[in-house]
Each structure stands twice: as C-alpha cells, then as structure tokens.
Length: 410
Picture 1: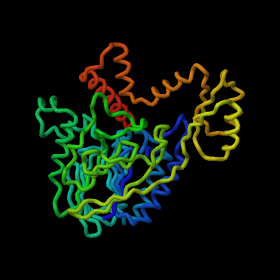
Picture 2 (picture 1 turned 120 degrees about the vertical axis):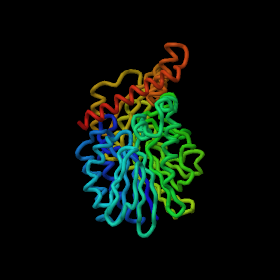
Picture 3 (picture 1 turned 90 degrees about the vertical axis):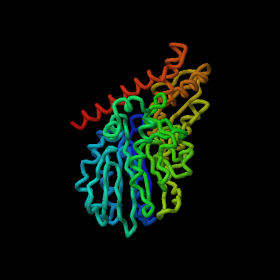
Picture 4 (picture 1 turned 45 degrees about the horizontal axis):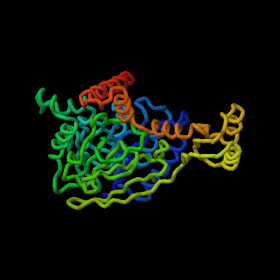
C-alpha cells in the first residue's frame, strides 16, 4: 500500500496581513501532481486544513477542488482529520457528499465513520475513533484521533472513567488511555496505522503553531503511541521531524510552506510511506519547492536598502527589511522602498544604540505564549508560576477557543 502523508496546510493564513493563498494554490497543484506521479493509494491529511474555524470561501473551494482531483472519482482513498485550528463540524459538513469520492472525514476523537462504500473502496468495520478499510485487496486498520482537547477527551473516556479518576489523570495519561482503547482494534493480518493531531514531547516548534503547551498541558510523550502501529501520521508541528523514542514510526510531515521567519532554514516536504502487514514501513521524503521565500535583508544604510529593492523588484519573495541608520526612516523613504519592492512586510530602522535592543525584541517576538507568560510571571513575582496556575490559565484559554468555535458554527 502506497500512502502520502501531509498536514498543516492552514489554508487562508496570512503573513503580516498579506494573503498566502496564491502560494497555497501553487502547493496544491504540486500536491495533486505528486499524488499522481507516485501512484498513491491512500492520502492522509492530519489536521489544520484551515487557519481558522471560519475560513475564507476561496480556501474552502481550493480544498474541495483538490480532494476531488486526487480522488479520481473515488479511485483513491483520502482520510482527513480536524486539527486545533479547524472547526470539526464545518470540516466534516460535506461528509455525505465526500463518501462517493472516497473521502473519509473525522472531526473529533469520538467520531464513528459510517460503514459502507467510499468511492471504489469499502469501510468494512468502524467504531469510535477507528476504521478498517479494504483497498485493492489489502486491509488496513486506521486509528483516527483529531485534535483531542480536554473536553473531547473527557467525552471519549467518560464511560470508562470514574469522576475521581478523571480529575487525577493528567492529559498525557488520558491520551495514553485513549490509544490503549483504540489499539485493541489492530490485527496481525492488517496494515496498522494512526492519524493524530497532537503535540508530542521532544519535538521542535517553529513558532507559527498555536501553542498547546502551558506547563506541560496538552503534551504527550512517546509512550502513548501504540506499539503495533507501523506508521503514525501526525499533525500540528510545522517542521518535518520524527518523534524521539518511537523508532521513527511517529512523524510530523510539517507544513507545506514557511509561515514565519523561524521556518526559513527548514526544507518543506511530503512523506511517502510504503507498507505491508507485519513489516516496518518504508518512508521516503519528497521535497517541495519554496514558492515565495521569506527573507530578512540587513542593510548598512538606506542607499544599500534602496539598491537591493531595485535589484529584486521583480523577484517573488517576502521581505523583512532592517536598515542601520543614524536617524529614523522618513515616510518618503518608506514609500520609495515599497514602490520598488511591493512585498516588503516590515521596515525596521536600526539606530546605533538600538541594535542590542532590537535583537532582544526580536527574540521576544519569536517566543511562544507559554514562554512569554513564564517570563512575565517570574519577572513580576520572582518565582516561576506553579503548575496548577498554568493549567488553570490553559484550561481557560482552551474553553474560550472552543466556545468561540461553537459560536462561529451556530
């Protein structure tokens, strides 16, 4: 079975107010081509399809057009799960129509996918959080774990946990319990796969992910993942990487384009997996082009900055422009620079006494909400915040986000 793993498309995302839809459209064209050229049987998209629960109409149209093209009238099976940026209800609203095109969608960990015909394939068996499918004579059991917030985890585990156990168990323990229940569906005679949108410990964020980890909340270690899974297709982290301690079975495909300056050094790729029952999966990385690079130009003076803008006026790239100067940049100079280079995102004058301060501010801008909160609390109180306080803050933020998503849907 040939599988292609991707995630974190964030369709509709902007950069400093500038739309990324043209770049995302280029990626989707390449994605369709790569699926065809590699004769893929199954496509796994592990969450954060959109950048918000209420995406632009153009973003939704791009997504559904892409699914329709790669499905080839149901010849290819496609599995999609919701991430923390997605509205589960909105993402799965087209499920009845998607079935005829071989598209399986899951919005929450408790999803029961209807059994039956999906395009030219069959969902033979299903239950809360899993499906068994038959594709070209091969069978696969796939565990589907869309973003598991505390609220959704409680809903899934409610019948098997007492109220006291529920209070005492950490998020990591609950995730482990979730996978322990689902893993019972794996068999020796099937291909065994996992799809999940989750933050695993030991991996590196890029700063463009919405933080899920305050004081360790919403963080799962490598021990939670099923040992019988031959491949674990993860979403949430935007840098492609393997989860430590999983024998390279659990992988983030990463986002297909750079979403901020911290991602500049990282290549963007897709993951191709070839697997049969009882054997380790064979994994190949497929590189993606950088459709419109993000660049930081450091210029020693205004004349150099102007010259660089003139020389690169026709080149497609996003620019953060830093100019060393003895005085501030005037409005007229800013207009002149942007006349030559329209894709300047920010112009920062670096004064002689300001360079050290700017470096410090730049570091602050790249910090996650979690890091900023810890720094603020320690600066104000002289000690780090207690774990209970951090968890309380996180639960409030999570509830606000879920309420906001529910309000959007209603």
